[in-house]
Image 1: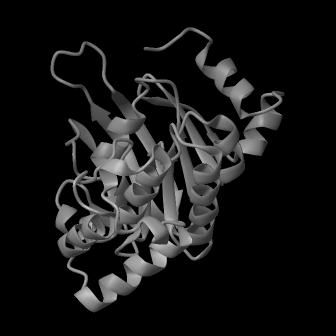
Image 2 (image 1 turned 120 degrees about the vertical axis):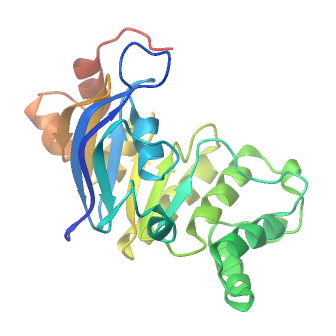
Length: 248
């Protein structure tokens, strides 16, 4: 792995009206080229951490840097370096896939000839070419999930943030998404990934941090952590570290 592309130092965030912090002194480094899994139960602080790194939420204290740029002062520079794939679909339902992606490409400032070429390539590898001119409102969940992902990849980001990229979709869509994510990672895109599919995370991530109550409770390569804790797999490790009580 390369040099650290993300540096997080003592991040703190408590939302108004909450007694306990969502992020509580979180520090970690992510090396260039990694697939870094930020894993934990509901309410553990994963999404808040990603929102801070993407400039959507301002921390109460601490610092984070992406490619050496501070999320507190340099978000204008960071935005061109990151791609964000949110859990909720960020698509215009009455537009086609191509029209949606043209809108996003325009926001990124990609020249139109280059953008059309890029969209055609991504639609092809995500198996959406046949349906590219159908309105997104008529797409299945898996198709919407794939368009959502393409929108985050259009401008060739150095870092891709993936919040539950395969939630609620069919096996074939999940396979196409994961195979292409592996491909882009091998081509140099660093990925920060959250998921409740722990079997998927175990095989996809090069490193993970298990987060609960806004703090890191263990961190390392998945198979090393599984062996150290004498558990069978990542799901067993997760339950051992975070407990079996339901989180709502």
